[in-house]
Image (cartoon, rainbow, N blue to C red; front, side):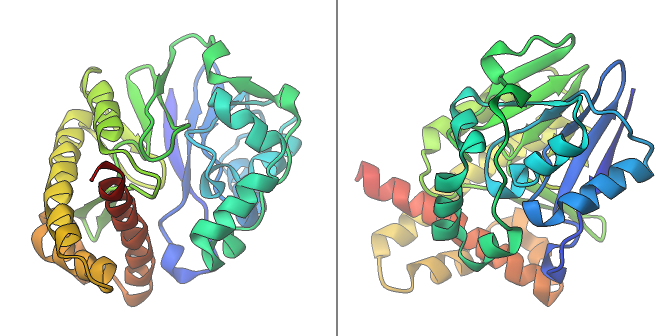
Length: 291
């Protein structure tokens, strides 16, 4: 079995080393996530350059447009392949209009950069509840999204964003929660616990990074979620018009998992501030719902 990561390049330099698709070549060939619609051809070219001429399956961790936007084009290019996704997400992949409208509302110009997802024929999609593939475990891990899935194949964990986002910046680890609204803390933590209940194994993240020990990073991430909850609840109680930017500054100061932020280039910092802003909004929305 051979597993490797293909970087999906973007035009915006802030999104370098950010999008990737995991390839697994074994008895079956599959990839995990396909990136946004705007870079579908780049992924196709990269797959061919690595010798991939046949794809059996495409595993979709969740239907956000930066993870499944290119699916229609990839399936068209590999007519023998089928995609596995959450049963509740199928209607949004077949008829993506509402998915696109929601993406524009949440992401704005970033969604426009990613491009609208194309429509996929229903017969090309396999609901996660009907997936029966030897050695493949499908795990429901809601939190980052209600329709989020993680996959385990022969002691390799593809965690999507259920374990946050993990990057190596000049050899130093950076770990950030992906908690956009609408966010529910307990549901997210329960998903992390599901992954921790598995054997310790290599972990592959939906965006780019990977590490040898899932337990090490998932335990670290779990502690980070509770740290964010404490910090952001304190800021929530203070209120004020500047609460989001103020909260980001406090997190950057107090969360050691974010220390490498200061060493990122300006374009990458701009990207990360956008995602930190969405993650903070998720926590603040959660507090509003329960208090």
